[in-house]
Amino acid sequence: MKAPSQRLPFYPQEKRKQESKNGGRDCSFPFLIKGKQLLIEREVNPFGKGAIMPFGLVSAWNKRRRSKSQDHTDPWVYRTVEHWKLEDQAPQPPKRHRGSSVFTLKEMEEATCSFSDENFLGKGGFGRVYRGTLRSGEVVAIKKMELPQFKEAEGEHEFRVEVDILSRLDHPNLVSLIGYCADGKHRFLVYEYMQKGNLQDHLNGIGEAKMDWPLRLKVALGAARGLAYLHSSSAVGIPIVHRDFKSTNVLLSADFEAKISDFGLAKLMPEGQETYVTARVLGTFGYFDPEYTSTGKLTLQSDVYAFGVVLLELLTGRRAVDLNQGPNDQNLVLQVRHILNDRKKLRKVIDPELSRSSYTMESIAMFANLASRCVRTESSERPSMAECIKELQLIIYTNSKGLSMPMHALRMV
Image (tube, rainbow, N blue to C red):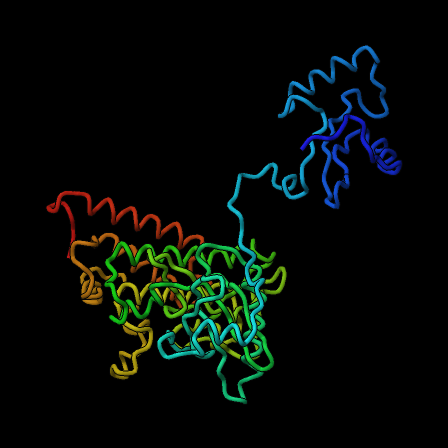
């Protein structure tokens, strides 16, 4: 947008004084037009603080500035505040305002056809989940809080934590919170709809499609990126511990992109601290960090342990805890930990549902080694999520390269 003339209609005296004090280096100031705040960018006086340009050079200098200007017509460039802030950054797609929509109970009933059985997707610790269609036509997943009275206060806390955290996060490997409903005593969370459900269902035969090895590696990498984003502190300024990472909280899109969900137990770590001592140990049995369980000390490495358990589920196709097994075989980590670095014995725990043509033993061994380090008892011996990402990328490359080689050169099961 161009100015109506080269003379500025508004240039406060205070601004001129401030600019003079700064030696002419303040090259932008606010300007009001039709109720919108704009920024006017000015070039700095090249002759230094307090200097007055010789009259004979004014014309030549203005001509040089115009030749450098993008529009070649006016030395004053008008941009909106939003444009100015992003001027030095790479173009980005428009972001959705997460968690900004507030729904009524009536809208939730309309979206789910009064919570009909046809729209029922599943049930978790928080309550039932339904498929819904908003008035805009968007298909969503609606989580309805259904807790006994003695757990209502705890559920209310988890509800508020999830709305607060997800409203501030933005990453392709975290589920999007579209909005929520807090109508009277009714509580609902509205998420983007994930067509393929959760990871555990696919590993245990409930999902429609069987997952081959490259697809499992893709899911593992996506989940790792989501956790690394939470741990990086880039989202809200301080690291976040998910505290309830598990295969049922890894949701899958139509093309099997992994997205982490359920942030009700998430914890923002105290600023500048790597450990938080909790009064109660919260999470899911089978994914508990042993150090967190015994000491109550919560760290980012608690999520790494849970991630290692999910890696073992991807490798073996078994549940983290299976009460249908014998007493010594119920816990997956305890069952396989001692053989993860033994190639001969490792073959026995590979998921039999995996196609023999989809993996190489080299990638399986590397994956098992990563999982074994993630579930070590001492948290200091576990890798970070950033390191997990790098190793998974190498494993994907190794598997892809191995599968492209002639069959006689492969070391496959």
